[in-house]
Length: 195
Length: 198
Image 1 (cartoon, chains in turn blue, cyan):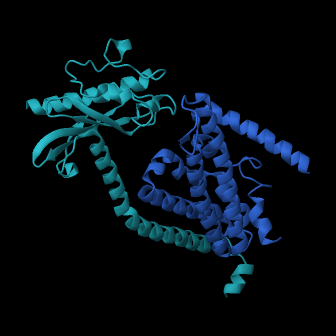
Image 2 (tube, rainbow over the protein chains, first blue to last red):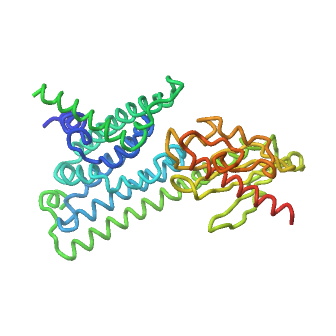
Image 3 (cartoon, chains in turn green, yellow):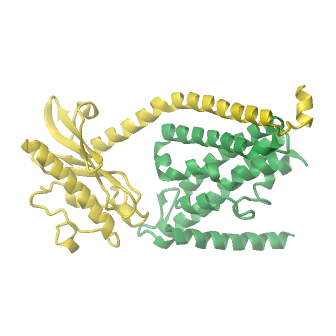
């Protein structure tokens, strides 16, 4: 398997949100705007990349029976680091995302990739896998956030193009389910055609 | 040794488990302690800037440092903070950081600028979790809801929405958020009056 495969798998073929349906809780909750989606996606990517690297580096030293607690501690460490850094340098975004940053610890995408990939592969493939999955996740969140923001608030990345606002339901939680559902329909249609 | 351990995974013996768990937790504590120290000052600075900007938004021009002259009052399990703003030593107003717990979703925090004569100079929202698109119109950037409070004297301007026989025009479809907003302003006013009468 080439490096490109390791990287691109998470982007399209095994996209965490649209294909594997992992990490849907933050996906639905924070994508009220494209910018929030971007912030959440990048924070998760950071955690994915570094926990994959560390887990891959220490995998041989960790006995099987305690591997999950060890992985969770490693993931939680990186999540706390992201949380502190965001609080210090991007306080507005940190406030918007609020509780969902600490909750990256329990995002199943992160534990999923460390357990299924990094614990079995060497360092560089694991890093590429983490980065690819993270960027795929970011992409999905931006897409979802952009659509919801367009329809719900009449703006994109904060730039208003409809002065009267939009259909508020798309900003509210039901809108997240609606948009995600339709996006999955399109992704599946596309995937079926290409195979 | 190093090569051996890659091919031969560590066995799940009690000793190995204790060592690996201890090592992982210890390393992460050290890393976190380091990052915590590193970000401690920027975090405090970010919070201070936020408060200062909020005070600047609700006060006429001042040249003291209101956060250094701040005094606080415990109330209902929370605190009200008062920041006196002065220009060349003369009081130009007091910024009152207040709260309301009757919002649609969690506590709402406002900063209310009161002139020395008791008129509201301006109001700015510090923190809220109201519904985006509805209740979040209490933010100044999102609607002109807060403008109706400007230069009003809370003694003869009833801080209640018109539905409750008050003088405040509520945000359409966000009566609860509007009520909570009024509640917070009223609380700020009550405290301010109480202190000035003492």
